[in-house]
Amino acid sequence: MAASVDVVEFQLGEEHYALDIQIAREIVEMMPITPLPRAPEYLAGVINLRGEITNIIDLRDLLGLPASEEGENRKIVVLMPDVASGSNVGIIVDDVHSVISVHNDQIEHISDDITSSISGYVKAIIKIGDEKTKSLIIWLDIQKVISDLGYYQNTQ
Image (cartoon, rainbow, N blue to C red; front, side):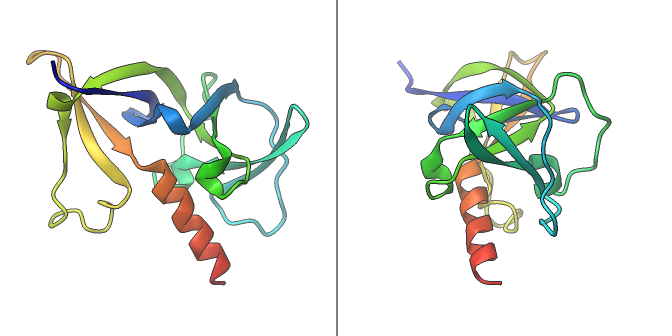
């Protein structure tokens, strides 16, 4: 039997993405976000989540994806604190679909030659469905994305 891994499948625009289930602490409904002055474009602001101040990152801005209309299904995926060096961080996504179990034969690693600028952020491509209904899910390395933000902020 092939080994498998669990991921959270979510949506940004029309595309489907995934992140490791171990780094997702919880998924909460969208709530009012307090903007911070002079914050980078990708930092939507902060929320008070059960007494904890949580930084909210707009994943769409961070990944350079086009803006979309405010969707009614938008969610905040709150990450485990160790993902962001102990900070509370959440990412805004357009919708969360489910937790899926992915077998090794459904995972296709991308070549570093072609996509060198993004290969550090994309773990792999997940192939779901049969030959007729096959869809692709981009498996993001959210931990790497967040850690690179920390490095960038510390060097300014």
